[in-house]
Image 1 (cartoon, rainbow, N blue to C red):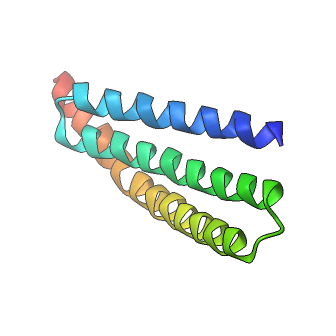
Image 2: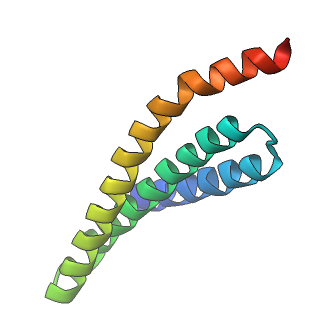
Length: 101
């Protein structure tokens, strides 16, 4: 399905964007905050890849099992990344305010 291909490309582009941004950042907490966004993008890539494989190769049981594993790993990555994102967001704001002063 072309929708999943577009979402795959967008999520991997966001992953590379946030990884490059985290390498350029000097602040420690902001780097962790940006890395959590990269983890969310990587998790969404895994989810979309698994869904794409299910819709393309739905005849093989092995393909379904591997796709389900990708989807579960991706969902875990997105959920845990979002929790870490919520944890680091106030700390990153506080760190940015301290660096301004």
